[in-house]
Length: 199
Image 1 (cartoon, rainbow, N blue to C red):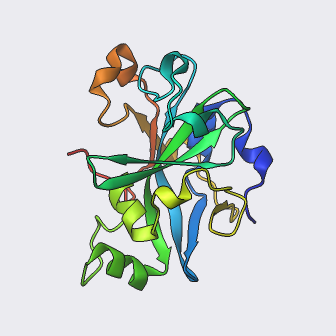
Image 2 (image 1 turned 180 degrees about the vertical axis):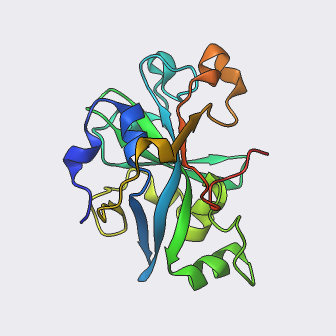
């Protein structure tokens, strides 16, 4: 079942990031379906989170989509090469987001390998937000995309994990965020081989 708009507009971005573990992310790019189960996420809060792009109500051309009602995609470029896929949550003007860091690939693996220029499946195929986007064909064209549409969407397949199976820890690559860098807002499925490794 495709996740409805109401799933994304709820107020607690941290809880939502946890709930996304076990949901499925799909893209349909040029008629090619790719996707898999989400195994790692990070929460970002627009209100009091120095790691969030919208901290202190910052509004730029890049962050403007964060102020939309939840249920749209926020895609941005890092290091000039990687697009990162984020899910905007909460009500309009709240600017909360969940970064999807890793999926366990399931559908369209051959296409993922082609996009990643890989001959065989390796654990870094979709383990990490940058390579995940390459594998799934996610780029700036999906900035602002409706997550209840037919190009990029999430599904609930009735899979849930007990809380003891989901680990929580500090987010990755946000040393600039001061004391907020230590918030345990990164979530991952314990023991899953597709979870990204801290470099």
